[in-house]
Amino acid sequence: MGERAVKLAAALGAEVTVLSRSTAKEQDARRMGATRLLVTADEAQVVAARGRFDFILDTISADHELSPLIGMLGLDGTLCVLSERLLLAAWLHRRARPPATPPSKFSAVRVA
Image 1 (cartoon, rainbow, N blue to C red):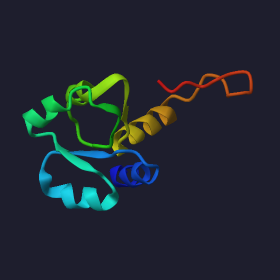
Image 2 (cartoon, one colour):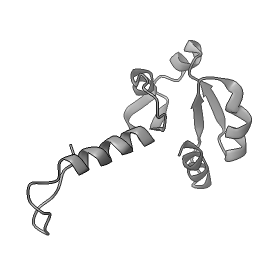
Image 3 (tube, helix red, strand yellow):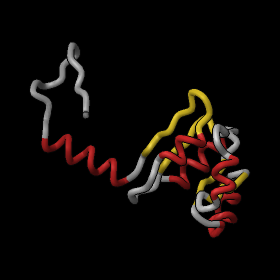
Image 4 (cartoon, one colour):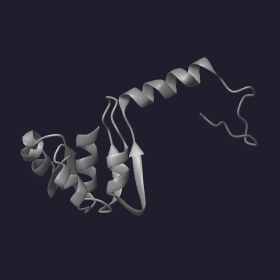
């Protein structure tokens, strides 16, 4: 998912920075259109990026800490967490607990 997001954002003219734990993906990131790679394992780079981003799309499927990402957001920035694990959990939750009433044009269904 992250690769598609990088390509789409770059195609739309956004300045794209890929966040990765190491420099191993730097060539791939640049090939996809990213202008920069930020190594999240490098505390100095993370500190330097505080308040820098307007939008962060997090596609990591493993458990991880979100607070460093939140710290990199600027004022009114958006952190969007989208991973296969979260999508599966939402799908399973939805199947396990259907809405009490069928949706109609007068009601809304909220997935909690």
